[in-house]
Image (tube, rainbow, N blue to C red; front, top):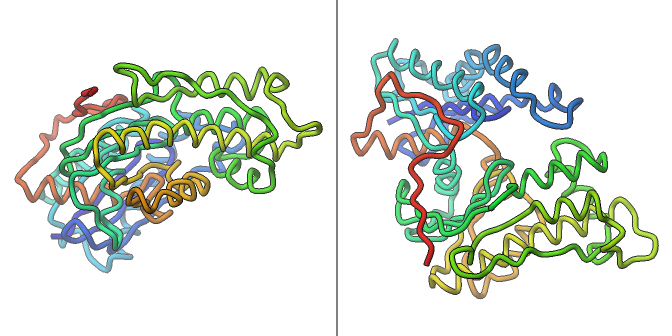
Length: 338
């Protein structure tokens, strides 16, 4: 069964066709980066307007690249939460109308679960259960994944998401936009030991697997000299030192969860999963754990992961009513601390 997947959760207008939940027939992503670059961050009003302008063309392109017509589709899947509300509404309402017009099933999906499903669209498919590492501009979560829609959050950021910290530091120092990609690039020319930035101490009791990025962001932006080690640091040194600390904050909680749960497979998802240092540091643990990262094309927001997850839900018999509403917050996550 061929499923159309649509994602407009933030600033990418994305549509894809996936067959039987695993085979990508097309994956089209229209980026809005040039329209937000001047502001060094996503402007919600601009994002929703561009989605409105582009979504019909992007969906048609995804059908054309898949070599099918709308009548060949067996269902439509779309991101309903979490994300920017105005952007979500564009994709959700388009998907409803599209499914209604064709009289085919419609399913609304959780964007975070879709990111975890992205790895199943590549050759190396993880077996359940495994630990999920969801890292993006809006979310930082460690979770136990027992099935495609059975997720238990073990830990999460208590303030800023890791991707948000990358964006704010990049904007302050003018590294470029998007911030995560820019810092990753600039940091390769820097000395990661030039600054010793602070690590949060949250690892007690119910916060055993939580993260915090507010303190690191403050240290890098407002207290830089307090943590300088190198005599004459460069901008590249700032980027490298920040990135090293940001990644270590993630890994300290992740490796703790691996040890405590006994789950030796880690599946990453989200835009920050494309970070080269994060991938390299996790790869160093290959003798201890099996790490699966989606292809770079599936780390950011895309319609293929939505279509893949949508197929599993539709195959099970799930359907969403046409009065389904969008939500800026994630729904359907269980929270359980050891």
